[in-house]
View (cartoon, rainbow, N blue to C red):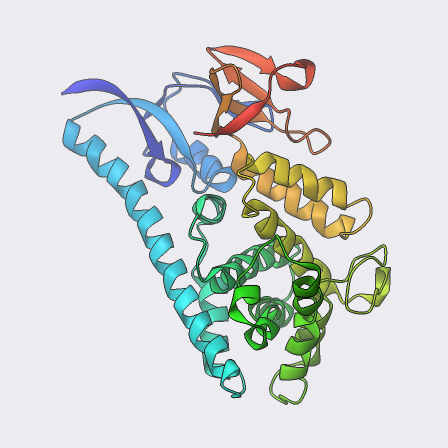
Length: 351
């Protein structure tokens, strides 16, 4: 038996374990280093960090440590397995529509129920969305990612059960119109020729027309599909609608769609810069209410993550500021480092 420092998932914490580092939330210290955990403070940790990693020191054998690490790995594998299944189900439904069949309501309901009731490991899901690098058949995984993010926003907004389900339906189907485009355009992310861009921008209307006469799909779902590329300043498409002329589902989906699209635009930027883009767009194109909800919650999942700086050093994120997202407060070599005060230092990537 040896005393070791291990990094474990928060839901594996047990009373009596001793923290190997201070535990903070939004820059406020919650529990001191070397504190022995109790049931009450474990409950508090789980409320704030349901699927995050913390360092603890406790007496245990090597097998126990391996089991804890395996537990986190198993959760990641299970999330990827579920996402792959959702991607396959979405692909099947889209291909049915491509063969001039109406969306299968049972498949739509099954995908929605799984996302709403089973996909709750948000920290792992967000990491998966950010890290996922498969580029072929991008349409289906993108649709799943946007649905997961839209559903998260819906839950953070405390939407009632019916509205949350309808929002999820709309997010699943938001790109259904791409089934009527040539595959090389439907699965493209960027780099369109002018002619391709004109054709690409027809997908929201095509999607609406595919659903227009489907009586078992609520009109709010259809409007979410039709308007998800409209923007508050009137710069969107297909109708250049503004402000309250745009359906709320479309505004929510637009935030999720923008985040996933910019995350996988081929520029390989640190995802903090994508969050900064969302924040900047909230002043003109994206709804500030939904952007604020999205950013405030998703930044919590970045707290505690380890990042690599351009000078080669690494640090842990302690506190983030929505007004300066790419310049958080870090802990580097047991010292605080406020990147907002460092002109020449910046985050390159998460590690």
